[in-house]
Amino acid sequence: MKKSFVILTFLTPLLFAGMITVPLWLSSLKDDTQKHIVVIDKTNSYSKVLKSNETYFFDFVNKPVDEVRKSSTESKEFTALLLISDDLAKNPKAAALYSEEQVNMELKGYISGLLNNYVEQQKLASYNIPNLKEMVEQSRSNIEIPTIKWGNDGKEQLGSAELALGIGMVSAFIIYMFIFIYGAQVMAGVVQEKTSRIVEVIISSVKPFELMMGKIIGIALVGLTQILLWVVLTTTISYVASRFLGTNIDLGTITDANQAGMGMQAVPEGGIQNILHLLNGFDLFKIFFLFIVYFLGGYLLYASLFAAVGSAVDSETDTQQFSLPLTLPIVFAIYAAIYSAQNPDGPFAIWCSMIPFTSPIVMMVRLPYGVPAYQIVISLTILILSFIGTTWMAGKIYRTGILMYGKKVTWSELWKWLRY
Figure 1 (cartoon, rainbow, N blue to C red):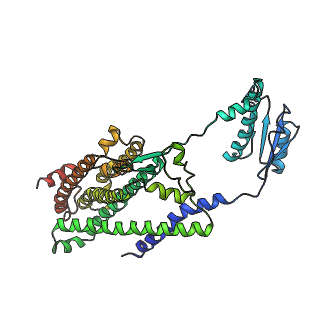
Figure 2 (figure 1 turned 90 degrees about the vertical axis):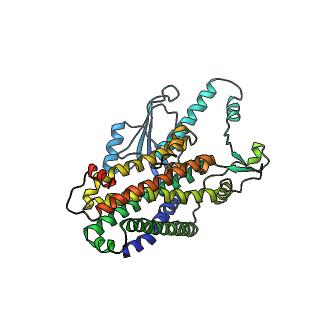
């Protein structure tokens, strides 16, 4: 009901879209300022190697380093000083780059690339083997292995391990954030109602368990609505902004599957076309359906516990001692998801996708790679039973704690409430 909530709902997609499009737009802008690089080459061998371009201007001088540094301190006339004190083919550490401020990776990489290529050519020429350079160039290869999935009907579909990782991690992170943000809202709402004594009026009309479940489900629906709006608005704004700014998210060209001898059609060129083509290799309906199920299952599991914590304390400052044991499994789950992405069929990933406190996050990482149906059934069964159990426990704590004031609750006290 707050204006800030409505504003945040529509402002957040702008922030998300800005995080996507602004870096792309900024990366497309070029710095017209030419950087001045002073070179002191004591070997007099690299003047033809370090070639100036529109971005970098190499100025070879024959002066002591201290003199050049003094002039730079006084006039700030160059960006960096490159000192080459010996033959780099014999002494690879004979080059150093000096500057008043930290040199960026682009400048360092450009200079290193030029010098490395030159030294490599020198070493190849020293072997005195005819056409050695051409043979080395021909021997180099850039192998890109497409991943082909076999469907149940025998059809072949181009897949992508990178896209599977992206889908899994984004889904897991959304659930992680949802549990944290909206679970904390449930706890804060319970504490607010308890401290303002509003709950005493509400309890006269409904049962404590009904009040707790109503709050949990209500915030869940609000959260789903908000996230759905975020997804739709972020996608729309990002598309419009990319068109307006003239940028395009390109994940790189995908190797033609015909080269792999699979007899498939070529992947269309362009980043968006590649993504759409690769998405056909995933069962998106299954992933989306299970995302909603795990989304709700994980939230309901933790939200009931957060509600129980909120009912047992008198202020938000007192929630820390009880909420820490709840947040640690959530934090562990996101780390488990990161490690499980490297080996989605390993024992660690399988067990973490079965444990109810980590399964909603870890299972989302495994789903794009393919999970046996029996594992999904077992995982969901355990999650549902755990949710029912935690809800029953939270209900007993909520029923007693919601009307208790002025008493510091301990873990032993909570255990007594469970046995009432």
